[in-house]
Structures are given as C-alpha cells and as structure tokens.
Length: 466
Ligand SMILES: [Zn+2]
Image (cartoon, rainbow, N blue to C red; front, side, top):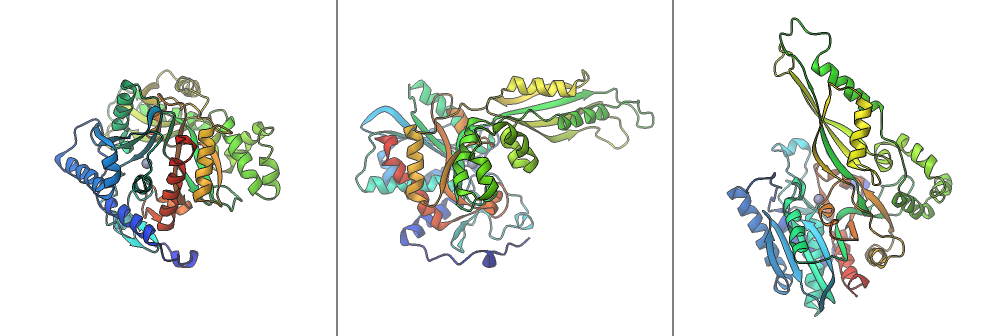
C-alpha cells in the first residue's frame, strides 16, 4: 500500500538550521538498530555492540550533557544520569527509551517507503523505526539540555535522566534504575516519560491539536485459560473436547464485558476539549461531570478506543490445541491480555472473568500482572500547570488535557517511588503517525522536533525546577 502524501499535505516550509541539526541527530541514532532484547537473558555480542554504539552516538552528539552529568549503565542497556543541581531536594526525572520494536524481515512487503533503519530525511520528516517511539523524544530532550547547558544554565535541583534499554520487553533496566534510586533515597518530585502526544484527529469533531498527557496508566493482566482433555484418536471424539470447552469459555468472556465507569481523569479530559467543539458534542461534554453515567454507557458503542477508556478490556490473543490434524487435544490453551481500568484491581479482574466463565474445567492461570498506576495530580497542581505552560510555549494552538494511558510504559515502574508521574512526548502525531508506531512508515516531522526541544526548554526553565 502506497501512501499519497502530496495530495493530503502541503509542502512544509524549509526547516531552520537548528531544525536540520536536530533532524540529523535523530537520523544518526535511528540508523543504530537498537531492537529491544527479549528478557530475561544476557545480551548477545551483537546486541551488546549495537547498544554500545548507540550510547557512544549519544555521547558524541551531546558532549555538554555528558560532561555535566554523572552517568552509569543500569541493567542490560539502560542509562541513568544525574545532572547535578544546586540541591538534591525534590529532584525531577526525565525518561525516554533507547530500544525499539523490530521490523519484519520483509519490511518492504509491510509497506515501508524508506528502509526502517536508514534514517532517511525527506518530505520535511525523519523516517524510520523509533522516530516517534521513542528516539524522537530522547533526542529532543537531550537537545534541549545541551542548548541550555551551552548557554550557562544549570538546574536549581537535580535532573535525573533515565533511558531504558528494554522498555519494549518489560523494562528490566528501568526496574533496576528505580531500585537504585530507591536505595539511594532519591524521591522524585516530578517524572515525565513517553505516553501521550500532540495529537490531531484524536477526538471526533476536534480540529485543534490535543496535547494529551497521561496522568495514569491502565494495569496489565495476562492470563492463560487451560482445559485438559483425554486425548485419543480423532475418529472417536468425546462429546465435549478440550477445545470445545475452551471455546465456550472464550465466548463467555466476550459476552460479559467488564462494567463501565468514567474516571475523574476522563471527565477532566472531556471538559477540557468541550470548549473547542461545536454543536451537541460541546453541550454534552461540557457537562461530563453530571453526565458521567450515561456517557460511560454510550462511549463503548462509538468504537473500541472509546470503549477501552471506560472499562477493563480482555483481548483473546494466543490459541493452542492439538499438534496434528488427526489427534485430539489433551490440552487446549488460550491467552487473555487484559488492560485494567484505573480504579479497578488485578483481583477484581480475575474474579469477573472466573464468574463469567463459570466452569471448573477451565483453569485460570496468571502469567503477568501489574495494578493500574496511581493517579498523578492535575488541575492547579504546579507540576501539571508547568506541563500545560510548556505545551503552550511550544504548541500554542494545542489544548492540553489529561488522560488515562492504555498502553504500558517504563513510567509504571517509577510510579512506586514518585507521587507525580506524567506520560507525554512533545511531538505532533496525526492519526497515520500514531498508527505507524510499532507498524510501517514510522516518521516524525522536523518542525515538530524543533517544537519538542522548545517544550523541554520551557519545562526545564519553568516551575518544576524553580
Ligand atoms: Zn515507547
């Protein structure tokens, strides 16, 4: 499938010298294919070399930051850095990850227009795996620090940088870094990691870009449903087979969705976008607080994305049965990937599923779980308003709202030791770009990279470090 960009978009204006420099820096690191190593295992020699050359590239590109910071490697490929401030009280932590998801060997067949690891700069954009997730944010953050340090700025309080090396594979390096911080008694006052973005086309009827900042994160629960059967020859099947029993259980899971409820964060989001909408949507959403019950019931009918906003979801992902066409399955297994709504728990989710399945022959096994993250302050908390102001300084036409992030990030590991954790990359992303994350044709606009640097500059010189 070929994208037709020319018809849909105007030719972007020629980038400034600064924007070109930032784009070159991003292209340089995109060319180093830091594919997330699956865990837990040691890196192969080749992976070791790739991540080492990525770290070396960062050192090369940002000599000022690396000169000012104490740097240590954490976990298999993570970096933990401290840019010392006048005091180590109320430190802040800025995060991004160095690893990327893989591309298929047949990436051309997947529809990539530019080779994913060539770091091609064209059409006013930087193309390639990681440009949005998450090397774009990594580069604009380092760029802002490098600029500020060169201007003689030094932080009023410690600025920690945490660059995970395996975020896409459970984030062991971030877990280790958080343990280190905890051991040293570092209590981050403010944390910013990837998550939302300056999104266009994200909300029906909204024509202004929406800077959506994650103030919490759904929980994760991966379950296996297992039915053991007797096996035997396919010529004499029992009345009920293991896969048959499992199939009935899966149907029950889909037929019994989790209860809906509208979280305060979602209410705040709806009320934030309402003034920028027209007609009935504006009228309804500006009353989101009073209408939260009816809204929560209507939203799931308007699409999967809105449904996921108001309830815990359960996706059936892997299925396993008999290994041969004429053999009965002695064991049938399905994997459920659940995302737990903020306000609910792992235990509540398991209980709901067991009740829906209601069949003792189906064993429910927890493979992985993490509770939803605590909710970070919004409203008139200075950390929230500092973010709103930094967006205003870099994307003046955007409306900033909080939301509950549905995917998982390294931020969930740090939430344990920090009271205010936000999830946001200061990069513009339209619908196509958001779909390109973990898919083909990932790309970022050069103009947006420059605004991203402006965002971090405003943040670092604003009240979170005052
Ligand atoms: Zn990411």
